[in-house]
Amino acid sequence: MNGMRSLNGVSGPQLPFAGKRSRSSVLEVDAWMPSKIQAISPLVDRLMRLIEGAKCVPGEEFDIELALREALNNAVVHGNQEDPERQVHVRCRCQPGKEISIVVTDQGKGFDFEKIVANGITTDPDSEHGRGIQLMKAYMDDVCFERGGSEVHMYKRSRSALRWRSSAITEGSKSGRQTGW
Image (cartoon, rainbow, N blue to C red; front, side, top):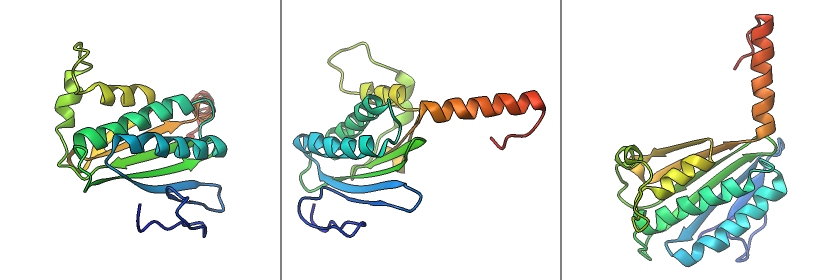
Protein backbone atom coordinates (compact mmCIF):
# COMPACT_ATOMS: atom_id res chain seq x y z
CA MET A 1 0.00 0.00 0.00
CA ASN A 2 2.87 2.29 -0.77
CA GLY A 3 2.06 5.73 -2.01
CA MET A 4 -1.06 6.03 0.12
CA ARG A 5 -2.00 9.39 1.45
CA SER A 6 -4.97 10.40 3.46
CA LEU A 7 -7.27 13.06 2.18
CA ASN A 8 -8.28 14.00 5.72
CA GLY A 9 -4.82 15.12 6.77
CA VAL A 10 -3.94 12.04 8.82
CA SER A 11 -1.18 9.85 7.53
CA GLY A 12 0.85 6.89 8.59
CA PRO A 13 1.25 3.20 7.98
CA GLN A 14 -1.79 2.35 10.12
CA LEU A 15 -4.16 3.71 7.46
CA PRO A 16 -5.36 1.05 5.02
CA PHE A 17 -6.85 3.66 2.74
CA ALA A 18 -7.43 7.34 2.26
CA GLY A 19 -10.75 8.72 3.40
CA LYS A 20 -12.38 12.08 3.78
CA ARG A 21 -15.64 13.65 4.80
CA SER A 22 -16.85 16.76 3.09
CA ARG A 23 -19.01 19.42 4.69
CA SER A 24 -22.10 17.61 3.46
CA SER A 25 -21.11 14.53 5.52
CA VAL A 26 -20.23 12.44 2.51
CA LEU A 27 -17.76 9.67 3.31
CA GLU A 28 -15.28 8.87 0.54
CA VAL A 29 -12.73 6.07 0.71
CA ASP A 30 -10.00 5.25 -1.79
CA ALA A 31 -7.96 2.08 -1.18
CA TRP A 32 -5.54 -0.26 -2.90
CA MET A 33 -4.94 -3.83 -1.80
CA PRO A 34 -2.59 -6.55 -3.00
CA SER A 35 -4.00 -9.43 -5.05
CA LYS A 36 -3.95 -11.84 -2.14
CA ILE A 37 -6.96 -13.65 -0.70
CA GLN A 38 -5.58 -12.91 2.79
CA ALA A 39 -5.85 -9.15 2.13
CA ILE A 40 -9.63 -9.22 1.58
CA SER A 41 -10.90 -9.63 5.16
CA PRO A 42 -8.75 -6.91 6.76
CA LEU A 43 -9.81 -4.39 4.12
CA VAL A 44 -13.49 -5.36 4.30
CA ASP A 45 -13.45 -5.24 8.11
CA ARG A 46 -11.97 -1.72 8.14
CA LEU A 47 -14.27 -0.47 5.42
CA MET A 48 -17.35 -1.94 7.09
CA ARG A 49 -16.45 -0.21 10.39
CA LEU A 50 -16.40 3.10 8.51
CA ILE A 51 -19.64 2.33 6.68
CA GLU A 52 -21.41 1.31 9.90
CA GLY A 53 -20.03 4.32 11.78
CA ALA A 54 -21.18 6.70 9.06
CA LYS A 55 -24.64 5.05 9.01
CA CYS A 56 -24.52 4.95 5.22
CA VAL A 57 -27.46 2.59 4.77
CA PRO A 58 -28.52 1.41 8.23
CA GLY A 59 -29.70 -2.18 8.36
CA GLU A 60 -28.11 -3.03 5.00
CA GLU A 61 -24.57 -3.73 6.24
CA PHE A 62 -24.77 -7.50 5.75
CA ASP A 63 -25.76 -7.07 2.10
CA ILE A 64 -22.98 -4.57 1.47
CA GLU A 65 -20.34 -6.71 3.16
CA LEU A 66 -21.34 -9.84 1.25
CA ALA A 67 -21.31 -8.04 -2.13
CA LEU A 68 -18.01 -6.33 -1.34
CA ARG A 69 -16.35 -9.63 -0.38
CA GLU A 70 -17.60 -11.24 -3.60
CA ALA A 71 -16.37 -8.33 -5.73
CA LEU A 72 -12.93 -8.37 -4.08
CA ASN A 73 -12.66 -12.15 -4.36
CA ASN A 74 -13.55 -11.98 -8.07
CA ALA A 75 -11.01 -9.21 -8.62
CA VAL A 76 -8.20 -11.07 -6.84
CA VAL A 77 -8.89 -14.60 -8.12
CA HIS A 78 -10.43 -14.15 -11.56
CA GLY A 79 -9.30 -10.64 -12.54
CA ASN A 80 -5.74 -10.46 -11.27
CA GLN A 81 -5.32 -14.25 -10.98
CA GLU A 82 -3.66 -13.73 -7.59
CA ASP A 83 -0.68 -12.12 -9.36
CA PRO A 84 1.40 -10.44 -6.61
CA GLU A 85 2.47 -7.74 -9.08
CA ARG A 86 -1.15 -6.58 -9.51
CA GLN A 87 -3.43 -4.71 -7.14
CA VAL A 88 -7.13 -4.14 -6.61
CA HIS A 89 -8.51 -0.61 -6.33
CA VAL A 90 -11.56 0.06 -4.14
CA ARG A 91 -13.50 3.32 -4.10
CA CYS A 92 -16.45 3.90 -1.83
CA ARG A 93 -18.76 6.89 -1.54
CA CYS A 94 -21.43 7.10 1.12
CA GLN A 95 -24.19 9.60 1.77
CA PRO A 96 -25.24 8.74 5.33
CA GLY A 97 -28.82 7.55 5.56
CA LYS A 98 -29.22 7.67 1.79
CA GLU A 99 -26.94 5.47 -0.30
CA ILE A 100 -23.55 3.93 -0.87
CA SER A 101 -21.64 3.27 -4.05
CA ILE A 102 -18.63 0.95 -4.27
CA VAL A 103 -16.33 0.51 -7.26
CA VAL A 104 -13.85 -2.40 -7.37
CA THR A 105 -11.27 -2.38 -10.17
CA ASP A 106 -8.74 -5.09 -10.96
CA GLN A 107 -5.79 -4.98 -13.32
CA GLY A 108 -6.86 -8.04 -15.29
CA LYS A 109 -8.06 -8.35 -18.86
CA GLY A 110 -11.77 -8.35 -17.95
CA PHE A 111 -14.41 -10.89 -18.96
CA ASP A 112 -17.60 -11.26 -20.94
CA PHE A 113 -19.99 -10.32 -18.13
CA GLU A 114 -23.08 -10.53 -20.34
CA LYS A 115 -22.31 -14.20 -21.05
CA ILE A 116 -21.82 -15.00 -17.35
CA VAL A 117 -24.96 -13.12 -16.29
CA ALA A 118 -27.02 -14.66 -19.09
CA ASN A 119 -26.08 -18.16 -17.87
CA GLY A 120 -27.51 -17.38 -14.41
CA ILE A 121 -26.61 -19.12 -11.19
CA THR A 122 -24.91 -22.40 -11.83
CA THR A 123 -26.33 -25.61 -10.40
CA ASP A 124 -22.84 -27.08 -10.15
CA PRO A 125 -21.58 -26.42 -6.60
CA ASP A 126 -17.98 -26.82 -7.78
CA SER A 127 -18.29 -24.22 -10.54
CA GLU A 128 -16.22 -21.10 -9.97
CA HIS A 129 -18.02 -18.90 -12.48
CA GLY A 130 -21.05 -16.69 -12.04
CA ARG A 131 -22.12 -17.25 -8.43
CA GLY A 132 -20.32 -14.17 -7.07
CA ILE A 133 -21.88 -11.94 -9.71
CA GLN A 134 -25.34 -13.32 -8.98
CA LEU A 135 -24.83 -12.72 -5.24
CA MET A 136 -23.71 -9.14 -5.86
CA LYS A 137 -26.80 -8.56 -8.02
CA ALA A 138 -29.06 -10.15 -5.39
CA TYR A 139 -27.75 -8.10 -2.46
CA MET A 140 -27.15 -4.70 -4.07
CA ASP A 141 -29.73 -2.46 -5.77
CA ASP A 142 -27.65 -1.93 -8.90
CA VAL A 143 -24.57 -3.72 -10.23
CA CYS A 144 -22.88 -2.93 -13.53
CA PHE A 145 -19.55 -3.73 -15.14
CA GLU A 146 -17.25 -1.31 -16.93
CA ARG A 147 -13.82 -1.43 -18.55
CA GLY A 148 -14.53 -4.73 -20.26
CA GLY A 149 -15.51 -6.39 -16.98
CA SER A 150 -12.44 -5.40 -14.95
CA GLU A 151 -14.45 -2.87 -12.94
CA VAL A 152 -17.68 -3.47 -11.03
CA HIS A 153 -19.92 -0.64 -9.81
CA MET A 154 -22.32 -1.50 -6.98
CA TYR A 155 -25.01 0.72 -5.45
CA LYS A 156 -27.22 0.30 -2.41
CA ARG A 157 -29.89 2.75 -1.28
CA SER A 158 -31.28 3.06 2.21
CA ARG A 159 -34.68 1.44 2.67
CA SER A 160 -35.94 4.62 4.35
CA ALA A 161 -34.73 6.69 1.38
CA LEU A 162 -36.49 4.29 -0.99
CA ARG A 163 -39.71 4.49 1.06
CA TRP A 164 -39.55 8.30 1.06
CA ARG A 165 -38.96 8.37 -2.69
CA SER A 166 -41.77 5.90 -3.32
CA SER A 167 -44.22 7.88 -1.19
CA ALA A 168 -43.16 11.14 -2.87
CA ILE A 169 -43.84 9.62 -6.28
CA THR A 170 -47.19 8.24 -5.13
CA GLU A 171 -48.24 11.54 -3.56
CA GLY A 172 -47.10 13.47 -6.61
CA SER A 173 -49.06 11.25 -8.98
CA LYS A 174 -52.19 11.50 -6.79
CA SER A 175 -52.05 15.28 -6.88
CA GLY A 176 -51.05 15.42 -10.55
CA ARG A 177 -47.76 17.16 -9.69
CA GLN A 178 -44.36 16.33 -11.08
CA THR A 179 -42.05 15.15 -8.29
CA GLY A 180 -38.76 15.43 -10.13
CA TRP A 181 -38.09 11.70 -9.91
